[in-house]
Image 1 (cartoon, rainbow, N blue to C red):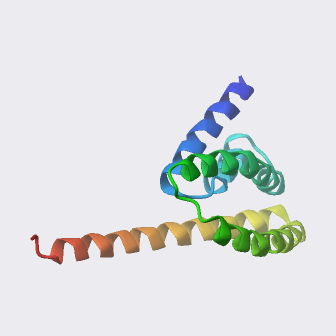
Image 2: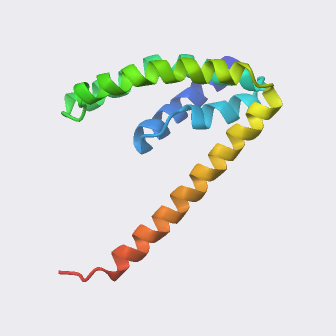
Image 3: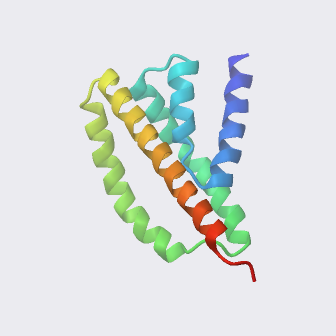
Length: 131
């Protein structure tokens, strides 16, 4: 049963990630910690391992429509590899409870930012004259 649940959650997270352009870890990590009882470190490491095949599949689909800038992607990947290594070392130096707390703060901050930006955009759109 757990195998089916993991596959189903992976599918849902994949759709939501591709639809909104968000990292699947934003959804997968809380699911693994709260739903499956994973330790925060295990959830984050597992989430990072999921990125590779899902990112490749998403990039292929977008590339077929001409929506991938490989030059920019390569440059960001260079910085990303170094950053993820440093971030992983930092995460592993922090106890799981503290890491979970900061992960929650980041999720809350991102949620608030999205709501505020969305409200501003909606207000701005209502103020524009219709041509």
